Image (cartoon, rainbow, N blue to C red; front, side):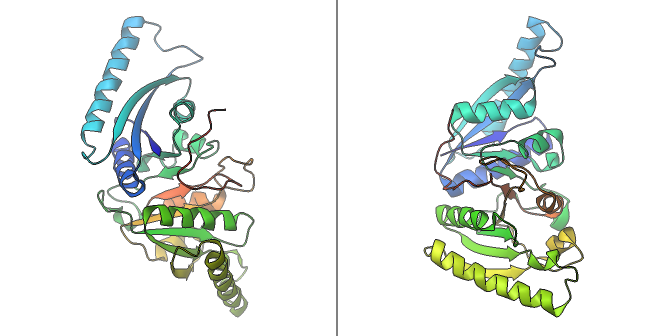
Length: 292
């Protein structure tokens, strides 16, 4: 398995590399650090071969420096990609290298690169938390993965998310938790009917996972509560070794990612990494991406 890390010579790039290392260790994967040289209207700016070579040399040097921070027990490669846009370059590199997961840095959570990836990628995209500040103060850089949380509600696609989370938990040998977002869809989350619906949903979730992934133990089905999704995320219990898995919006084409409003709000509030999975795709975290 290969994991692509979208690297920038910034603090956010460091966040991405650190998450990439944690995932590579958990998944026994190779890291492919990719830095994209962007162009404008199809041409590097300025149009000077010497300057272009200078930029490429600098990028190679920064990548070598980043690769030097990767522990010896993790396999790593470096690549410079030239493209019209950073997101386009990362997607092209993912296809060329056959990577099954793309990682971007926490400080770029709402940036144009992450936004483009989270509306176009054919493979899951993992977004790192910041290592300092943010909700919950960020995640310790070296914390090993210990638990996968599937965040689901009643909308179509919940079963895909739970299967993907179960596959991730099985592949990494970690615990599996489900965070039920059902109460947040109710007109009055505090009403007895909302609580009853949430409890029924929790039981259905347990039954589904017992049948679909009997080899994975569900440690908890937590029910989200709060004045909205961001408040509920901040109120939820998180551990340093958590990884959250969410699905794509119903607007997504089959096999592609489209960041929905709920996932977008979670992204802003979560103190732990978030993985967004493509719609209607059976994920194993093993298969290489097709180059077709």
